[in-house]
Structure formats: C-alpha cells, structure tokens
Amino acid sequence: MHRATGLFSLVFGAALATGALAADARKGETLAKRWCAACHVVAADQQVGTTQSPAFSTIARKPDFTEAMLALFLLNPHPRMPDMNLSRSEAADLAAYINTQK
Ligand code: HEC
Image (cartoon, rainbow, N blue to C red; front, side, top):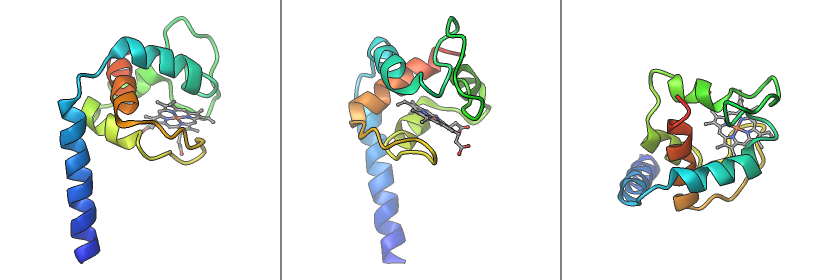
C-alpha cells in the first residue's frame, strides 16, 4: 500500500516537473531521427520503420494521447525497445515533436 502511494507521488511529481520544462520539438526531431527511426516511422518523409512499431503519426493521433503522458511514458523503456536513458527534458522534447506529427 505504502509502496503504491510512493510510486504515485513519484509519477505525479515527474508529470509536474515535465510540464514545467519548455519542451523543444526541434530538439525532439533530432533525437527521434537518431534514436527512434530504426524502428519507428518518425517523419512523414521517412519510408520504412519496422512493421511492429507504430509510426509516430499513429501514436500522436490516438484519442488518449497527450504530450505530458508521452513524456512520462518515454522515461521508461517500452517492451522491445532498448533503454535509451532519456533525460526528462529529452523525453519532453520527443513528446513535443511526436505531438507535431498528427
Ligand atoms: C528497437 C526498436 C525500437 C526503438 C529503437 C524505439 N522503439 Fe518505440 N516501440 C517499438 C515497438 C516494437 C513498439 C510497440 C510496443 C509493443 O507493442 O510492445 C514501440 C512502441 C512505442 C510507443 C508506444 C506506442 C503505443 O502504441 O502506445 C511509443 C510512444 C514509442 N515507441 C516511442 C519511441 C521513441 C520516442 C523512441 C526513440 C527514443 C522509440 N520508441 C524507439 C520499438 C522501438
């Protein structure tokens, strides 16, 4: 029980901190092309990603998508994705960039 509460405040605190940063979508684009393009289609002019990974435009168009949630999500590596050790500001920049791919 206490663990769960602790985790909640940790996640909530991270959300607040992420929101406070001025995210930079152009930095996010550079990061995406360097770290994510091997698997994801990260830009409209990119031809191939891998078939298992959703395109960033698909991610951005999901009904429950928000930039803040995505920035949080990116702080933990997702299954089948290598741990990129993204900093909070890098995660926020990537989220801002993905948000432009709608
Ligand atoms: C080694 C391949 C690989 C790399 C590199 C990679 N991803 Fe992924 N990513 C995947 C796969 C595969 C999935 C689908 C996850 C699943 O179905 O388990 C995914 C899912 C996601 C999702 C969730 C989409 C959803 O449906 O909720 C996001 C967001 C995402 N990736 C962002 C990124 C970002 C940002 C980067 C670069 C920092 C990145 N990924 C790098 C393979 C990768």
